[in-house]
Image: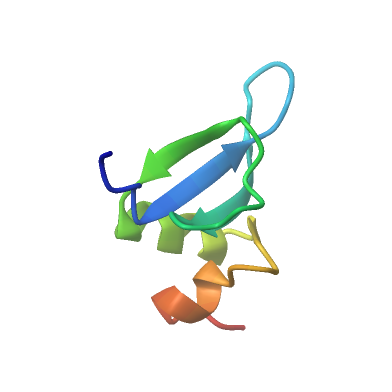
Length: 66
């Protein structure tokens, strides 16, 4: 079985499917609308206000804290 991606971006429902949450790759609370992301993409989305998943805390893992 391949390793999961290190970071995931959960997309919303509907037109455009905008990012709604950022997760670590091992998060169990991802739903079915996630795509892999590079670390710089995950950091950028978090800095733009996309929500960090509370259970897996990607913002802490990436060093992006308010």
